[in-house]
Amino acid sequence: MNLAGWNFVELDLLTILTVYLFLYYGNEAVVGFAFGQGLIIDLFSGSMRGIFTFLYLIVFLEIFVGSRVFDIQRPKGQAVLIFLAVLLKKILFLALMALFSFDIVFSKSFLLAAVLSAIITGLAWPFFFRLFDRL
Image (cartoon, rainbow, N blue to C red; front, side, top):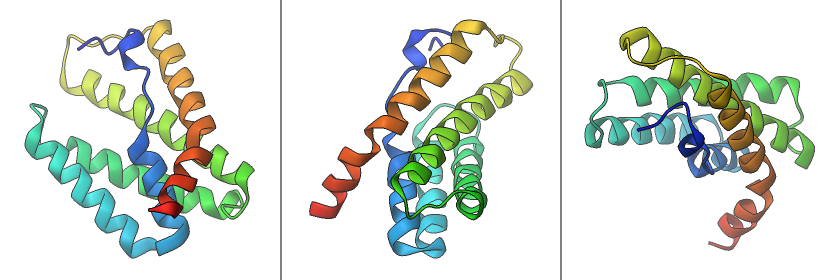
């Protein structure tokens, strides 16, 4: 996997779903979702056990703390929270990989890909919120 290249640019649907659950269902639903999603990813991935559970719980914590600073009821606050959550998750993931593996190096292309991924996810949230409302 090329963590430092353009393959790292993606739409982070799980973060959008986490913010949606936080907005409409509260803390308990989000903690359960984040823990369960991280556990499932940990079980089916070849990575270290617990890393994705930790990352998704950190995403919840960022949303919880960020909702105190930004108004999560308004579209601008939701976009900022999603942008920051995706960016924090990607940077923290690379930092954890660099901490436990000696093959990962930081690069400008990773930072650009992480910011671009956060921007794409931050701009795509209204479509997915409407889709989740219809489901």
